[in-house]
Image (cartoon, helix red, strand yellow):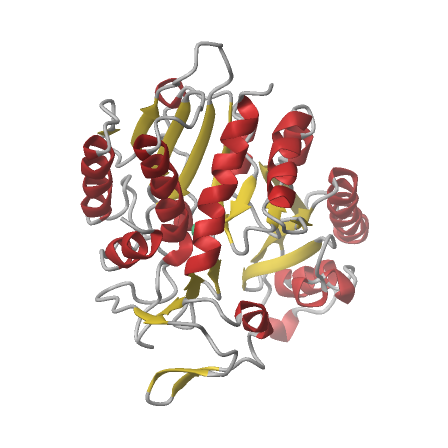
Length: 405
Ligand SMILES: [Zn+2]
């Protein structure tokens, strides 16, 4: 089966996750794809392919060489984003893309001026939506590339490879992709997620992430007799917040710039609360931002009395780079392989977390590779068939390098 046939097949299965659910998987329908993948893996001869009660799929392609070498894993997620419908996905293939705007359906047009990266895909065959759903190439392009790699090795027994671990996970889009990941069963020395755009991109960095909750205790007095007595918690919250520079807001940052983001505010005279997320690739800079928030708290407390403002701070996740850097061979194999494909590696720090970050901190170093998707999480999503083929080739090259180690 070609990667194209695979993507078309997987995209038509609705696997949208649900953030309001507290089960894993968050939606039963993710099993429909999981079970199909287990069947396909078994047909390809991967006898240990399984799906567990939480909808995690695992399988191994055993080594066909004598010499012991490391087990490399490849991971993709089965669920699709929650921002746009994933029901009745009706994909269409555009052959030999001409670089012009794409009419998905009447009135819904992917305009090149909005998505300039399309210019790099002239001549490619693209898979697009009918304008009414997302495509789900995020991350079914990753699944298709991994399955294509398995099929290649199974049908080319003369090609030598070590032991390969395969994992397909549920609920990545709602932050639950690693919750029940079975490291022992997966049993790899290191792994790569295939959850990025162009196969030239390589991501071994995420944000360091903290959550900060600021609580303000006021004193409610009838406003008619409030003079010199009332302390309005809402005003305290505003005084606290205005100490942070505007340029530290997400809407003014990019690349490796971190931010302080006010995500929620509630308040009345007696009590107010501000919820923040704080992000930075550099851990020292994250600490500085938290220190700035603490100084703002101290200022409020000096002025209005100890305990007026309380801060609760917790670390949500850490930049996986510190782990990946302990395993330089993992990055080297990926970057060398990207170059062997004839591409120039684009090292992109993720402005968010990845499943790989959690996996890395739990002992499985796991940077991210591109799989050919673009404009993800909406109806303008597309996928390049040639880039999916490159992604499949890329991971075969990486597998080849485990033999040299
Ligand atoms: Zn994804």
